[in-house]
Length: 341
Image 1 (spheres, rainbow, N blue to C red):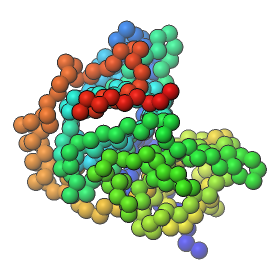
Image 2: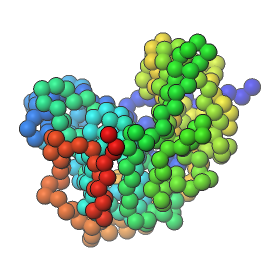
Image 3: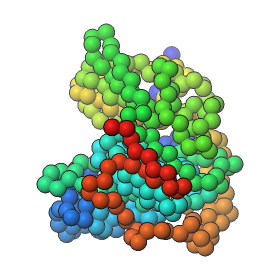
């Protein structure tokens, strides 16, 4: 009988290998110290390559930030970012004038489309205690007809994101959280309107699966047999997929058209699943621009140099909100939304 595991690769350091329609997947997990008065780390930055700090010294990184961890203003065109914040906060600002603070289970879905500049800073709002921050950022491609869609972002607040519990015959629980897709008749909040995931026939799913020690759960088949499915076993001591056991963290390309029995071996196990029907178009990438041809990449660079994708309406490249500010989103049209308490 043919194995449903098509390929297994060591997980390694992010970014992780992805399959069409996904382009990129990174897991940031930083044990930040207490915050200072500027919402940066109350710790020495001596010995860090500021502006390019990815080394993980002392268990945390400044990334491209120099005062505050994160990613100051940078451009994108031709794809979408899906940011799942499992712990901590992100302060978003963009060239449309939109801003947000989100985290603690929230998801932001940003269609870069024809071009946007945004910053993603990690404010360390807690003084006198640690500020652990954990998130996934996933890049989802856009088909050629949507690569010049108007930029748009949607906030998926944590209380609106389905977390579906399953209990096996031994009483052990598995919880599946849906950032995209549908399971057991429950559907994730809608993505932006021009997303590949917003089409009814693409079967895009972004799920995180948390399994208690010894739990078993059967992952159902994808709705579309053409969908590509990848499992990222990123936390825990061991995972069994059907009859194969993995003690090291793995990237598993698996068949989407069959159910898969998963079992946690040892302690709690966590898995990220990315699934979707492939777009099946050429991909040409140059840093933050993803198009179909080299000429389109050259045009993206020219357009950015000429227009800065609308400019930057903020005084700093790394803006953050006040320490006491709660989670919110202010859209480009001025509309403000906050999650329900």
